[in-house]
Length: 456
Image (cartoon, rainbow, N blue to C red):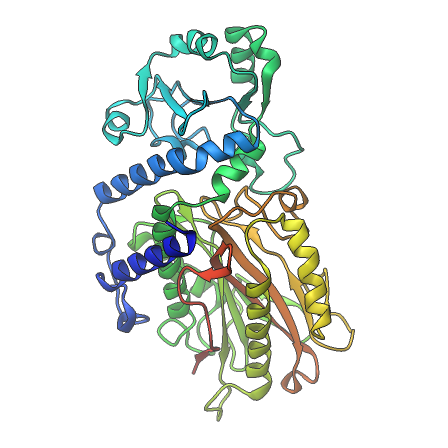
């Protein structure tokens, strides 16, 4: 099936899921769905198995071969000690096992689980063979790999998200060197780039599952930025944070991080997550993410609190948001799969300048004349800031990766627009949506914010 057809099928399926639950259109901002109304624990497990098998079938062969990897060995000591444990199985106390992936040609990668929990793993059907930990040495000798990938970094771990590829402890590394001996100990290489490619290309099940949690995230952000939660002059920023935290617990979701609820001030500063009371005339935003079934979101929403006597959002605020939508569409048309993040980010900066905007590397407005734009798009999916290709200066290693087809991205940028309501100072509109990068450009996984949210 052509990729364009795949995306159509995926998004239709996601829409059907949403319409079939209490998370459908008219409910938005009204309902209070419970965990059982999303899906059951068994359903989630079955979905994770489906995704795992498709990833091993359709993504892993290309990821290993592009990086010249003959064998990938992952050690899981249980209880989630390996950051990628849920990519391969389930968190369990019965760890002490190996996942081994071997490429001996053909149209698939051979998969082995040695030790660890086997009841659910065998029922899942993702692995070809199960065995004992003591069989590792013989398995490696039988396959005789020339390059063996292990989960350690080949760059300093100085940016959030890189830990995904750094799960191998010194103890386990030493064990592998001794257990396998030469010549295999000299064939160890970092799995960093392999993991970036493995997480960077999504199968249909991942796209559908992520779109569900993305829609839930945006819905609760929009509820939080409404009079359901906020009473101007009464509600504090922390009150909004704790409301979101409580909804996360009600729905049985995981925390990506504690919500960030912040107010932009005309002097360029921000006030966030404290006892400041929400005031009329505030420009307020939420940055939040939640997780389920090995997926975590990362998105923002933008709102305005009407002043006394106002019946609609003032023109300057509306214009600032409208400029962000213009920039959003520019980016959507100029970012595609198939090139590195660096190539696309540099080209995108020039396109933005050519269209009359001032590109800035700073995340706050300057005194320069005109509308300023800053772009920082990072990989998303299994964690908030994932390992795959990114278009973000603070993640230089990840800009060198190729953007793989059907990659989940945090579509993140800031637009600073002068507004008369702020005495000519620039209003920052911080945009962040989780979207899909395809060969045609950026496609939505759930409805993006198209209007300023209003708190009355």
